[in-house]
Image 1 (cartoon, rainbow, N blue to C red):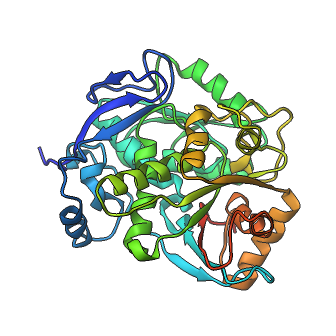
Image 2 (image 1 turned 180 degrees about the vertical axis):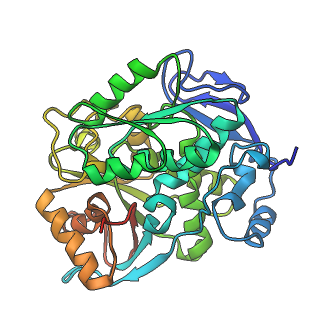
Length: 384
């Protein structure tokens, strides 16, 4: 056995405080049904020595293996997850002296940040004995699951909303995954998928298993690696569908703080479409959890998540970091996508354009301020 040195010690539930050993193939809390979180022996790790060690390793997601859940390095399912670039941007006109950057995960395998979660979750599922995987998806998560499932030699079923573009369906099918199209939204596709797959497949849905978040938290690690403590962003503007990315960013930054590598967490700012904004509405109305969004509609498929599972954790991520939320129209998103291409040469998906579209409103509301370092997270590349 080739040990990764993972310091994983338990799975815990923030909703009911139940704890579980990390050795079983588990999904959600067996006591209350909420999301489980992986915990590591961070206290037993010399943070600065560890950080110096990982920076001597080849770049890529798996360099952080001590704080990832996979135990045996032979279980790692990788497509070469290199560190994504952080690029300087000139801010929109009239927005003062914002120090603006964008982190572009469109360069990752399968073209989006979903590769982060799936490389870790598929690796761990295979290590724990899963024989078949499924997930509902708006596109990117299904594409990533299909690719990593193929790499792992595991059968995959992806449930997509009926309106999913044929090009997306075809791309997923090319990896050998079974594709099922049903329902108007990812919520409906997921409900039917869980009913059909309950007794035969492991559910890889957003926040319904513990380990996709672990891949997503490497976004925080890479930001520190690239900027250093002195250059950390004051705020991160993030497009939000299911919200795993926000949960992962918070978790990653908290672990870095526990290791003494940073002093504070960047503010996390959630951006959603005006036609489907359950997280932003819950933030504005100070709700503990997000109520389902009725008649959800947006051109950005990754933002069309009317009822995010375990929304309490997503809201907690924003509130704990003193962040906020904002909405943008489909027209603003489309124009932002064009502007990012024409001004900066960035090909981004519609959902990834939402943070740029939100900047003027965030500046007007004082959510981002002149002189601050603001990072826009580009979650996926545009289609050709």
